[in-house]
Image 1: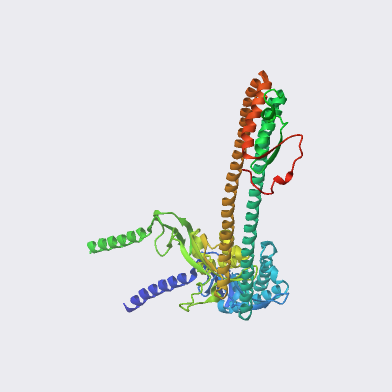
Image 2: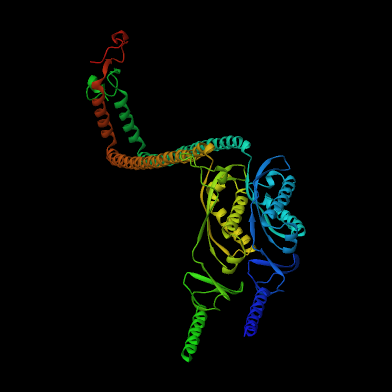
Length: 296
Length: 305
């Protein structure tokens, strides 16, 4: 009876042990992870594929986050080739590529970021040292070489990080370009001076345009008036000519009468109360007065 | 005993049924879902509706509100002097002509590829923020301060959005950027008044020019009116001269015709009439043709009587 009981328990225990072993032989890998299978602390193989996987029950699993991470190194001051100081804030997009190498050399993400900081800092410092300020910041997009510089830096960092630490560097990018605090006051002063110059220029240009418009208006006015004068005088001349022609047509038909009329008209105007006329008694007018009707 | 056996089976069956049915899941209209089996993605994009998956713990369903946009601020608050709560460095960007601007940008993004969104990056917001910020800094470092403040703001926004989207696709972030909006771009307070003066100078320019245009609009129509007046006057003068001449000529012709008929008599008459008009006004001295004239009788300045 006792023995039977033991046997019964033994069977249950064996079943339970088997179930535990089975349970220990399977493991799931999520999309966000790598699993490094180690055997007594020694890495055996890496599982890259998500889903259900198998291992020996005596092997253990180490999970690594394979997702893309963003690392922001502290902003640091760099010197360009033309000896200008820039404060550069960058970011590094990275992920674990080779878990085996990663655990051997780095171990955890915080340590990885310290390594990345060194790689990127020295890379940036070298890259900026070979570029002038105006190839980093400039008013024309074409002359800005920052992207090429960073692509180059990325590929170099990528190589270094992958070989040394099993890290893939996807991107090294500049997040922010700024000037050192001690330079800013002079920048503000320069900005002010520049704005003052622009303001003066606007006002002067306003004056210029206004003067031009006024001068143009005056010119147009003179032009309009002189053209009108020209036309008006022409019209008047036409009138004068026409009237002269009319007079001469009429008068030339009776020149004698015209001469008489005109002379008499002229007398009326010439002779006024300041005139003293000395009339001879022989004159046409007085002949009759003096000598009677038969005088002529 | 039999009953208890049957009952146990029924209970077990019911539990099993419920377990299987727990694989039924609902995706509402604003959502999409991702189904993973043992951690592996088996259904990367489940559209709204009712669906069946393997029950827990085999399958796992993760729902995402794909329509909902997330909001992210890039660049700090614009300096608020009154409150003194400023982090100026956060919002400072350097332009291509080495001016410092305070810029605040709002990014709106949503889910484009649910599986990537969930599993490819550690922190979607952090990635998106970093990418947009770097593209923004690059664009601003390639533009002049006036371009950023005025004309090219929209172009910069579009360029940043396009470039950032491309980078985010390269990262397989599963993010769709809906908009990049430069909410405020302002000069630093240390130079703000100088910038304002430029704005007022621009207004001055417009004012001065419009005053001059006002002058132009005043002078030219007046000149045109004056010109028209001159032309009308000239035209009137012309007609007057012509008509007067015609009138005078007609009168002369008529009189001349009469004169011709008896020129001697008429000549005398006209002469006499004229003398009648003229002679009364003037001082007259009648002298005999034969005698000498003593001119002292004419006193200087003495008016005619």
